[in-house]
Length: 587
Image (cartoon, rainbow, N blue to C red; front, side):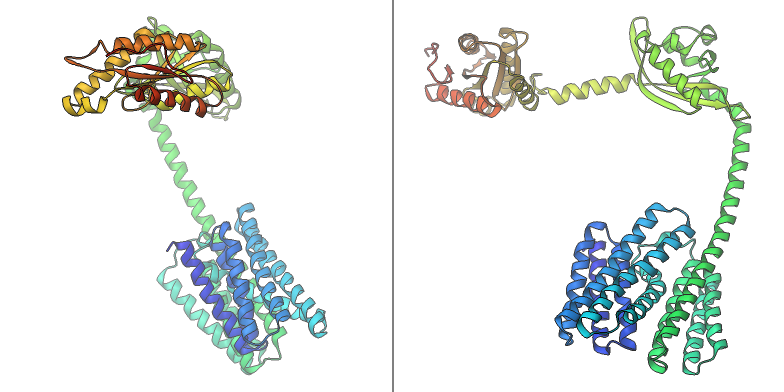
C-alpha cells in the first residue's frame, strides 16, 4: 500500500468515526463540536494528497456522511444538505490554501490567506448551504442558522486544521526547527494548564480564569512557535468544547468567539516568535557567508594562475572588448603558439570563421548584461584538424559592481564528439554486416513513401540458412551473412538503401527503379550468391520484389508475399509481386 493510499484510508476511517459520533450525539452539545471537525479533517487529508486524488476522496466523504446520516434517521434532504456542506467546506478550504501557499512565499502572507480561506470562505459556504436547507425543510430563520454554523465551523477550522495537517504530514515546512526537550515539556505544561483553566472557567464562569486559559495558550505559542501554537490551541479548543457541552450548552456563541480569538492570538504570537528566530539565523548565515567570501577572495588571486596553468581547459582573461589579457598554457592546443603570442588578440580571431560572429555576439551579451553564458560545440582549427569545445563566459565585476572584463573557459569535447558519432552509427547499423538496421530502414522507407517517392522494394531470404548454421556452426553462418552483404553492396547503386532486417533476411529500397530494372538486378544477385560462400559451404537466396505504392505496410507485405512465393516454387529464384519472374535458376 502506497503512502497516499494509506493517508486516504486513515482519513476515511477517521471521517466515518466523526460522522457516526456526530449522528449518535445529536445536533447540539457534543454532536455539534464533533460535526465541525469533519470538514476540517477532509481539508487536511486533501492537502496531504496529490490533486488527482481529491475528487475520489471528496466523493467517498460525501457518500460516507450521507450513509451515516440516513442510518441515524435523518431525512434524505437533510442528509444531502449535511453531506454537501461538509464536502463543500473541506474542498473549498483545501483549494484556497493550496493556491495561497503556491502564490505567497512569506509566512505572514500565507497565514492571512489561510485565515481568509479556511476561517472565513470555507465555513461561510457550508453555513450558506445549511441555512438554505433549514429554511426550505423546516422554516427556520436562515440568518440565525448561518451565523451559528458559520462561527462554529470557523472556530473548528482555526483550532484543528493546523494540527490535522501536521498529523497528515502535509505541512512540515512551516515548522522552523525541531523542538528541544525543555520546549516540549513547557508546551505540554502550558497546554494542560489552558485546558484545566478553560474547564474551570466554564463550570464556574469567571473572566479572569478564562483570560488565564488564553494566556496559557499564548505562552505555549511563544515557547514552541507555530508547532507549539498548533498543539496548545487544539488541546484548548477540545477542552472548551467538552466543557461547554457539559456545563454550559447554551453559551455556544461566547465559547466560539473566545476560542477563535485565542487561536488567532496564539498563531500571531507564534509567527512573531518564529520570525525572530529565522531572522537571527539568517543574519548568522549571512555573516558566515561574508566571512567565507572574504577568505575566498584572498586565496583566489594566489590560486588563479596555478589552476589555469594546471588545468587541461583553456582559460582566457579578457577586457570588455574580448582582447586577451592572459592565456593559459593549454592555448597551444588550439593556436599552436605560446600564450604570449595571443595576448592582445580577440578570442573570436581564434574561433572558426563560421562561428566568429556568433561568439562575438554572445560575448557582447555577457559583458553588456554582466552575466555568465554557456554554449557548446565551438570549433577551432589547428593544422587543418577540427577541435571541439564547450565554452563558458564569466563576467568579472569591479568594486563598484560594473563589468570590467571576462573569463573565457574552453573545455575540450573531441572525445565526446567521437563517441557521439560512434553511438549514432551503432544506433543506425547492424553490428555484424555494417548494413542499415531494420528500424532505420523502416523509417527511411516510410519517409520515401510519405514524400511521394517511387521505385521498388526487394527482400531477400537466404535458403536453408538455419540448417547451415546448425551443421557448420554460427561462425560459418556469420561469414555467409557478411558475404551476402558485400555482394549487395557491390551490385547495387550508390543511392540504394541496403538493410539487414532479420536473422537471414535482407531488404533493399531501390528509389525510382522500375519493376523490370529491380527484377534484373535481383536476378543477378540471386545468380551470383549461389557461386560464393564461406569455404566449402555455399548457399542460395530467394527474393521478392514489390513496387513502392500505397502505404508502408502494404509495400512491405507485398514484398514478403513475393518471397514466400519464391520459396514455395523451389527457392533460388526471384518473384515479382503479381507475376512470375523471368529468372529461375536451374539446379
